[in-house]
Image (tube, rainbow, N blue to C red; front, side):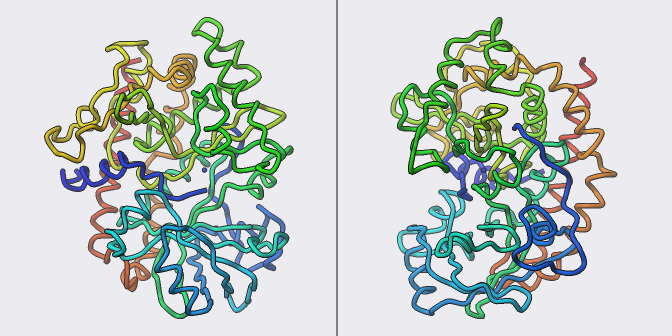
Length: 457
């Protein structure tokens, strides 16, 4: 199992709001994208052969960035501003002008990487954009790509496993793969490359892409300001009356009326699948972790997801930022959340939930709201419990099963092992192998916990 020091570091980062990668359950998705042997034209159609080639699981693509030395130095000197600077992308011999890059992230992958003005992480996450300066330009049908540094994940696999499980269970989720990156000949090593959740993503997956996309905001607010701050589309004509109406539905419903009241808003069958994957990956940074902030602890919020208001089907939940999934085993798997108010609804010290030393200063003042005490989360959980059990059984018998997960995971590890060994800023091959062994243990233990839950039924 993971050492106490490792667990403490990861949980501390989660507490601090390690939402990390900026940018994303309903909807539809698919399994891992199969690529082609020959690279298609860079202007290929979105989510067709073009973007499939970029996320081809058999390939380790190399991205070369060229830019003015002064701009690259400016980015390094001002990383936390997260502002773009012009660049040229060189990919498989083709030059894409009018591109741009910037550093990216939240606390866990950017701000925590600095001690004052001194960068203390070996590499930072980077966002590549091809449409910042040319709105019509696309790269293999994509507008942006995220290159996540994985400085907290020496295995380089947690995000890939998480997104794969969502997609293999038929949910809509970003694609992820590995890539290497260099800037002006400076090799930055291996990154986890994640598809951007943006207007292009909506156009690729929804018949109607004109709805509002919100990042990491739960329908718990009666005022418009939090929703306006979270809005990621339609900003120029910002209208968040949909989220206010969604909030009003949640506030006005109960267990007795929730199914009928939510029918125009939520697909509960799809949410049962989402909950199954979210819990099976023990995603402490996801929708089920409501962090309560001082001084009065009345402000409890979750993080790392998107809502898309599909005009034809209601609110669709999309996972995002899964680099803190699968660091621990969720042995409860929703049992407590299925009992309304089992221990009251006061926020509890996070150290007790995580079974870490409560005398450690980094956990003092950090509280979590019991999941069932958030009204929407509790309503969804109780309304979908039977469906959830069926979905978590489908998960453990299917995509999470060793005979399905093992070969794919082994191929991913083999694909990047040499690049990890050569990575001047990476964890090194020994740490990479050790953390992948730990990930295998977590997967085995989580399978056993799911089987125990199912055996109780």
